[in-house]
Length: 331
Image 1 (spheres, rainbow, N blue to C red):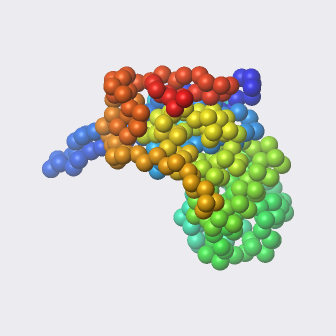
Image 2: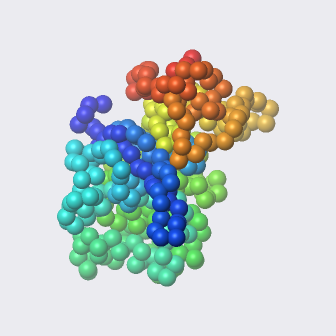
Image 3: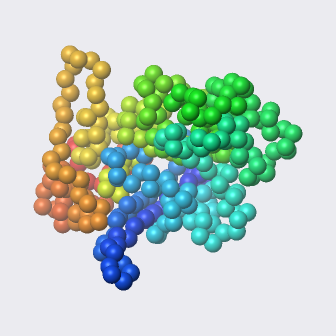
């Protein structure tokens, strides 16, 4: 793809959180959490990019930092060539609202992301009113259209979140995100709290909506089966850093980083007679307050050598669009 196809460019993004301890007078800084540490990747228009890794690796913080929900500590984020971090920091309200409309977030847990005191009609139509994009007399028709697009009925508009199943609540969350006609959606573990059969329905709905509306997704998940189902490319994160990125087929079948290998070989096989080699990673995930030197994965890597602890690996270019940061790759 050419540069004109890049809708989002994340370059050297950093997000650090200070750790403080209370004292008799005030507080004292005792450390820094390296939540997102020099993360870089591109997202192409109309694609679904998967962002995967263990819990706590920085996936959600990366999304929240890009969206300006938490201020960045450094780096650059370009959206259609515009400096997004500068908009969040110094832009006018109109400039911020412009990008709030273009980029939306689908939260992981619909129980906590939906106001239990608001009926669905108010939850979904709130975006119309905040962004002032629809005439008052047209709001009801637009509301019913949105509910229909996500598989709900017009009478659902009068109900409250607690009157729906988990899958239906997630459809409401998706409808709310679509209410302002965005072009880019971060989906943060959108099916993690759902039953397997319902997961498939929601994923199929997301794919259908993407085709219909030409949406671009960043799909954040640790459910690798769903990542393989809907993503075109995958970014693998470990302890705040990107360790491998490439086309989904390459990441799943021709991985080069040993952390990616461990993730892929941990995927359950639905055949009880088929055995798969598992890689057991020893030790615990290091603290992001004091991350290891060199390759951050070296404390748990089965192929570790002295160089891994001494020098931080640079990204190596593999096949088309495939990059990995490992001194001694899988093959």
